[in-house]
Amino acid sequence: MGRDALFDVRNRLLGSARFRKLAQKIPVFQWIARRRAQALFRLCSGFIHSQVLLACVRLQLFKRLSSGARDVASIAAEASVPEERMRQLLRAADALELLEERPDGRYGLGVLGAAMTDNPSVLALVEHHTMLYDDLRDPVELFRNPRATTAMSQLWPYASGDPARPLGTDDVADYTDLMASSQAMIAGQVLDAVSFRDCRRLLDIGGGAGAFAIEVARRWPHLDITIADLPAVADIARQHVADAGLQDRIEVVGVDASQDVLPGGFDAVSLVRILHDHDEPMALSLLAAAKTALDDDGRLLVAEPMADAPGAGALISAYFNVYLMAMGSGRPRRFDELAELLGKAGFGKLERRRTTVPLITGVVVARR
Ligand SMILES: C[S@@+](CC[C@H](N)C(=O)[O-])C[C@H]1O[C@@H](n2cnc3c(N)ncnc32)[C@H](O)[C@@H]1O
Image (tube, rainbow, N blue to C red):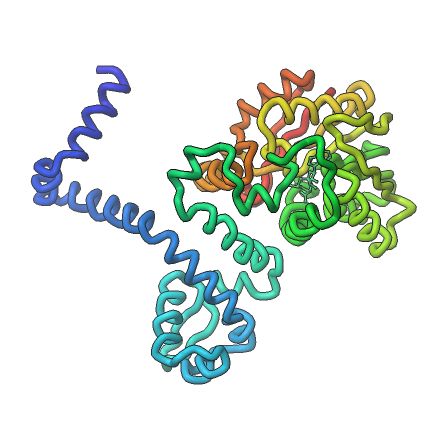
């Protein structure tokens, strides 16, 4: 019997109410059934989990409890929520490990809530998701209509907007802020995976407000760095670079990298959270620009979450396939898909580097 036939038999059995009833009498099947029921229930209640998290963030519970556990009445009064309702929220948050009930009935931070204090990147992302969830109110409509105007496509206008319309500051400010705040989680992971010791000049294409370039400049003081991003984003980056006092080390150019000529003579080019934003034609245009900017044997660094990340591929795949669809272009790629794309663009000698949290980013290095 082939693999397909085996899958069919399994699914026919799982889909039969009679089989499920019979299986409930056999201990090993009882155990499997319990696990499956829990997995399905977790899927059904995922939205509730994310809304409990959002309520905790908006009511600033992590901040309020960061200096120690407190009783329900005082948390409720301070957050202007009726005490009984606050108790229900606290219990739900306890169940999700965001908060923790202490033996005396007070509530303090749970392990996940503790990780959210003093963590503006994650707090900003939680708030950002309200936009995605609005778009997902009617998921079927969203999947059916690739041209729908969504809140996400408005936030990320380069992904699906009219390429002939130049973007202004108002179009790019919100996504550039969001990227800059979440970059704090990423740069460290990438820089622990890649050394720039042997490089002289780095071009960061789609470098946003410059958060990644600034981290690289601090870690590798010998490196000359150029950021290339759309003109309105480049204006924001220039200001950030000046605020960091790095204007002598980091140059910023405002260009559409898919159309304009980029400066050349670099021995390293980085694409951090860029390729997964784009369908193949645009991804290939950006890779062609990277190739032109690189010296022979120059090094291309690609950093983004990958659909087959060790231990995190399933989470990345479920999340980014939907996130990027709502945004209007792109998809998370597996390493073999990325390798094929890079091969088509003329890059070789690929190395997949380990990162400590592959959920946050994967890293691939290739040569021109
Ligand atoms: C998802 S953000 C990533 C920003 C930054 N690399 C980071 O990880 O924080 C994608 C960036 O690519 C830039 N971008 C998109 N299309 C571009 C193009 N055609 N030319 C230059 N930059 C572009 C956007 O403006 C944005 O700053």
